[in-house]
Image (tube, rainbow, N blue to C red; front, side, top):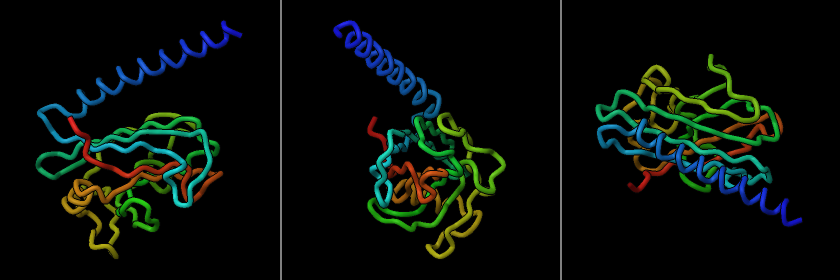
Length: 177
């Protein structure tokens, strides 16, 4: 019994150390030149309605200081369903129905989502901005997309076959340095 507990504790510590190292490395890679970093912790409890899932994830974004693109990386793990798509939505915390600003993977996008676990990395440009026109952001309007990101009015949603409305969600906020 004690040996199992010790092994579990070692696993937890090693995962924690790995996550810390990855976090430090990611911040260094994403934010050269003192650019602002925006991040979200993704969980099923943040979905609307909340879903019970062991899945978790994280998202980071760094907008270009000239307003021409947004670098991003997202990681998720332990999804209960196949990942079908992931988006950045325009909407505040605890509210549903915010329109899609950009697709990160899956859907009609050419880059498929990792099935149950994996990284998605990329650069969002004006070509990737879908809207939402009904909320005042028009296709191609990267500057407005960056403004709502900076105001904390965006969230990430990972849609799966088990939870089509979203298995993971997280509000994007500025990271304190």
